[in-house]
Amino acid sequence: MNTTISSELMAEAVGLIPGGVNSPVRAFGGVGGTPRFMARGQGAWMWDVDGNRYLDCVGSWGPLILGHAYPAVVKAAQAAVADGSSFGAPTEAEVSFAREIVEWVPSVEMVRLVNSGTEAVLSAIRLARGFTGRDKLVKFEGCYHGHVDALLASAGSGLATFGLPSSPGVTKAAAADTLLVPYNDAAAVEKVFAEYGSEIAAVIVEPVAGNMGTVLPEPGFLETLRDLCTRSGAMLILDEVMTGFRVAAGGAQALLGITPDITTMGKIIGGGFPLAAYGGRRDVMNCVSPAGPVYQAGTLSGNPVAVAAGRAQLAAMKAHPDAYAFLDSAGERAEAALLSSARAAGVPVTVNRCGSMLTCFFTNQPVTDFASAKQSDTARYATFFHAMLDRGVYLPPSQFEAFFLSLAHGDEEMSFFEAACKSSMAALTREAS
Ligand code: PLP
Image (tube, rainbow, N blue to C red; front, side, top):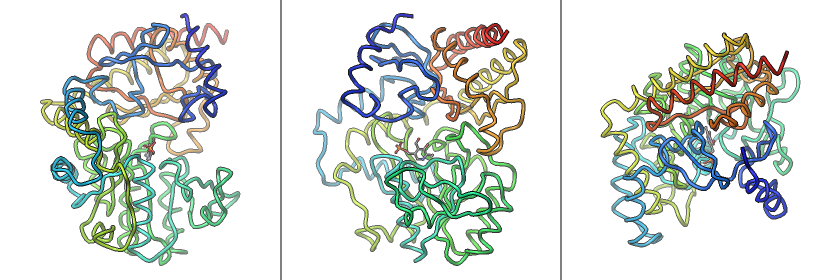
């Protein structure tokens, strides 16, 4: 595969943009090699600047549930921008969009639009703290909620649950109010609540985790969080930036039957544009300025072009007779292909999947939390990633991310995936021997 132009662009980019990229995982740090600079996309496919074609199993990290350049989304965005790209004043489309979101996600009685998932999460946390008058947050190891200071915290050693900064530039104070607990460990959360219950403003969780690779909640885990929050007066924040509109029409909360106090949304809701949202109980949301005292604002919030694209994407999802069954069957085919080709090649794998989001871990052990995710053979993932890339399949360039499929991943695309998977897994054993 000729990647001359990508290589030249990367060589120039590293002198102009930190690491050559505008978001770290794009740099291929987790798998090595040269990142591919993309030129265009159509449906489930995308083409790089050297003219190579890839089956896209990343979908811009989740937003592209209809595939690239879906005609109705393109048309809506073009029409909106032709009428003016931003007003800094309310528009009718924002009201319609809010009504639609409230219909899709019943726990959301009111909603505020923002520009990124990070912004949605930091606003939701400020709101939870403002509403409860408490400071502490409970967060799970391996969950990612954007680059919010308080959430760039990692667990201390031993039994310490207080967070330590996981990035230079995050103050000890910002991380110290974050209590770190292993994902799926209900007993550990109960212990934290027994000690700090009256100081906890919120528990924030990915209801199906995607940021340590896909990890599903064990039965009873989310129910325990709901119960502990209700009893102590803390807010349960379900971070559905990734799972919202992806794993079911009403998000993971609908699929799993959990009602949060606050939900954060992003990715799919913006139709591929920078748009995210947080919403929830009316009494809680009415604390947000200017209705209430918790300050939050944004020059481009509710941007007309992003709103038009997001509305068009959700409308197309709604109009599809069986969108979620289709996505699930694409996910099922990908899972089956990974498992059967790994078995044939004698490569131990564990595949975790929720509908059209899935991860292939290179371990024969179950993956239920960050510690078990880290047992995966990441060097093997990197080799598999490159074998797939060489065969024209673009997977996430990191073991600790999810594959995302779309409504454009039909029979032809999944057959292409199956064939690439079979020969890539076989290549792994050839390499090892
Ligand atoms: N929350 C979750 C669950 C995410 O997966 C992400 C990003 O991947 C974010 C929040 C942050 O969103 P953004 O990258 O739009 O700031």
